[in-house]
Image (cartoon, rainbow, N blue to C red; front, side, top):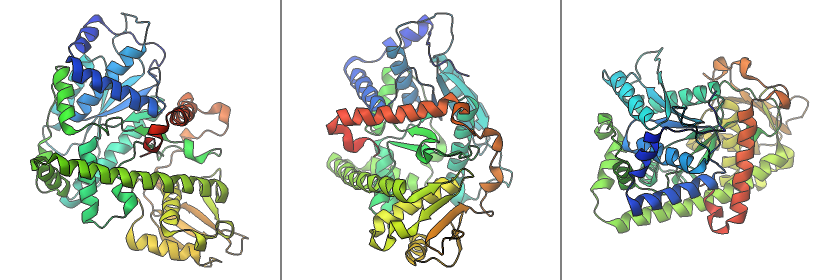
Length: 430
C-alpha cells in the first residue's frame, strides 16, 4: 500500500520542479491547485494517475507531483517516490512497439519521483474490430485502472482530459444527434463503480472510485507548455493521427482552425450545457434519494407509484433511469435513443406488468408490489455479471477499507468547498 501521510523526495526531484518557467507555470500551478480543492482533494490523499506518455498525461504528472511537493512540509530524503501517488500505464498490446513504449514511459515517470506500474491488456476474444477498436481499448483501460486502484487501496483516479478533448466530444456528439446532457461532455468529477466491488448498503452514490479531470480548463497548447516548462519529454501515439477514427478527424479539423472566437464559442456552449446538466443531476439525486432503494445484494427497487413518472420531465426521468441502470450494470456507457424511449414508456405504464432486458439490466415488477414498484438487477446476459468477485465485499462499515471512507470524506470536502465558493458552484460536477 502506498504511504499517504509522508512524502519524501530526493533532492533531484526538487531541482526538477524548479525548472518550471515562471509566469505560465505559476498560473498553471494555481489553477491546478484550485481545481484539486474544488474536487475535495488534498496532497495527503492517495491518488492514481492514468498515464499514456503523451503530452496530456505527462503534464498531469508534472502538475500532480508539483502539487504534492508543495503540500508537504516534512520531507524524508530516504524515500524514492512521492507518497500516495501511483501512475498506471496500460499496454493495450495493439501495436508491436507498445511494450517498449510502456517501459520508456515508466522510466520517465519514475524519474519524476512517481511510482509507476505497467499492466497489459488481455484480449481473450481476439483483437477488437477496427470500428470498435478505440471503444474497446477505452473499456479495457478503465477496467485496469479500477483493478489497480483497488489492489493498492486508492480511491481517487486522475485523468488528463482537457478543454480540447471536450470540444472534440461536443462535435462528435452533435454528429450523433446527442441531447443537451450529452453535449455537456465529460464531467469534472464522477465515480467509477468497479466490477469487483459489491454493494453492501449505505449511501449507494459513494461506493465507487472517484475520477477527477483537473485539466479540463486547460487546452492542448497548455499541455505542451507545461511539459516544456518542466523539461519533460513525452511520446505521441501514432494512432492519434489516423483518419480512420472519427474523433481523430474532428481533432485534426479543430486544430487547423485559426479562429479563437470559434473555439471560445464552443466552450461557451459546453458551459451552458454543463449548467443544465448540473441542474438536472441535482434534481435526479433528490428523486433517487426519495424513490430508489439499492439493496444489499446489488439490485435496486424504484417506487414507481411514489415517483409518479408521468409527472417527471423526459430529460430528468431519462437521466434518473440512466444513473440507476449504470450503477446496477456497472457499465459506463449511457442509455441512448430508442432504448431510452422504450424504458420511459415502460416505467410510465403504471402498474408495470411485463419484464424487459435493457443496458445490461433485467427490469421487472417487484414481487408483491402489484406493479407499483420496479426491480432492476444485473442481467445474467451482461458480461459484468460473470466478473463479480465477492472477495471484495464489505459486509460491515467497520470492515470497509480506508480508501472507501476516504472517498466519502473527499466528496464531503468538495461540497463544503463549493458552498464557500459561490462562483465555482456550477463547476463542481460539470
